[in-house]
Length: 437
Image 1 (cartoon, one colour):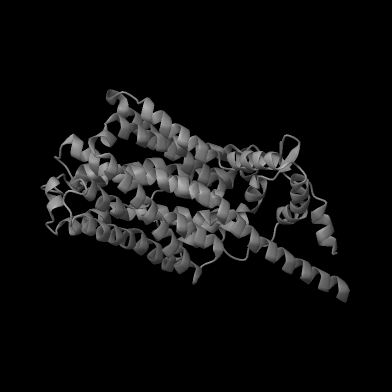
Image 2 (cartoon, one colour):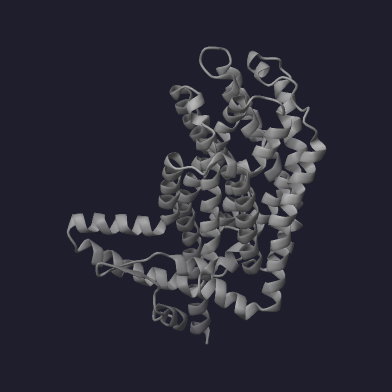
């Protein structure tokens, strides 16, 4: 065994104690490997990878010696600790369904959450994302085309095909929901959850930031054109939104780009400046003290705000139950289909870290921009129709975040396999060097 392996194996492991047994959370490993993985290529194996491999067998042996019910209990406890975000998400959606902010305060709540929580997420991202990695990813124009074509054209075209099939039976689906499905397929990707999930999955967070911000910059220009194109068919369900596009896009552009500037670009630039001016302090606060978790809590508040508004307006009570079930089912199908397509296309030419970033960006849709877009594109419609239009988007958001949280488990394991292979290759090279000496 080489000197390198001996040194790594003696390093202390990072674990949590649950009823006397050690269950590895991998969180410390994720944070240590984050900078290498963000680059997407040539990430060298870290000491934490060796610690993981050296401790896995002992953890497994210790747990298999316990009774089966205790092993199941420990596995459940590990899952809850690892997927705390998903558990909290379910609780907040349940809370929003029972207790809502009064309608008179909804607008104020939306403004505070939209600006403050998103700004906090991107300030933290700016403080923790290396500037050189970010600049490298901005210059990758081929990936820009690859991601944005899928994010706008692939998603909207598949949704329109399904809506066209559903529209053959006018008694099957509500017209407002069909238009809402078309609209949700045409809106740009989300930003906050993409950045958080990519980080948790050890993907290329810099690439996610670049593609998400680019998509939201293009969204106000591309999404209305796509929606207008699909609704020009004159199908029976389009009559529920007469005179679309009459709300004036100038006001939309002003509002959207003001929001992007104040809640995204400004805090991100400030975070980058803080990181480069005070690197040691920044690392201590966000890595050692783990205050970067504030970004995850901010995302939970954003999701709660969306569902709180949907329940307060009575959107879910305005349509038949079987229509809601169909929307949920198709949301799962769409997410799985888009994820599968972009995953296999990405693996043809991208690294694992880049693939993870693309998989989170392409299928995601943003109510944060979708709501103001719908208010302008469909100006003058009744409140009940406006609520129906937003139901598919709100449901899809909850499902995409839940699915993305579960995928972090799969992607972390996938990344660790690559790290383990690189570690073994490093050990072989080290052994060969020592033997020659």
